[in-house]
Image (cartoon, rainbow, N blue to C red):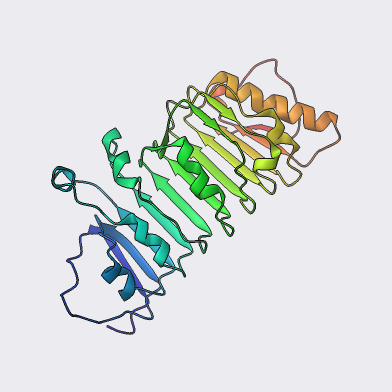
Length: 258
């Protein structure tokens, strides 16, 4: 048991609380997937000090809500070796309260949030993670009609995915917020007005992929491509799902209907 390096539970499992007085520590454990309703007390964190990949599913917790229990998500910051974190909630808006205490370690490289219902203003805690390169926001991970940047800057973010944020309408940002972004994937953003046009000015941007989004979002991606090519930038590729092919739009070898 002390030599365990990887635990991957399919589909998921709820672990019991560690016995009182037990000092058993899994020093070699690097991967822990997929745990259900994990309560991250200090005792739990002490037992997995070197975990690098953590995948948690939170659902079926009506009893916890009624009793005012906490999942102690503020203790994730104690996992100083953690590089990849995935948290999946339940598709009900009241669960957002359960993630208010979420505090993340600076060691994170990849973060996936799914159905967490965190307000877009909570993005500030993510933006300042110094090593973050991949961010996946799925299934109403964040909620609200406006995602507006103030001073936040994703200094190292290379890949951004946003999907199924049905109430997102306004995305207010510029190139300074994503200085090294390489790929942008937008899926099922049916009410988003447009991609911030300044995103096209990011020198490292290689691809924008638009799947099942609003027509105005698709048109803004094409406009970004057109503007960049007029400026001599031929490195950007834009992909749009074929069922939303737009007739009579700007033509380019870098515009692909997939």
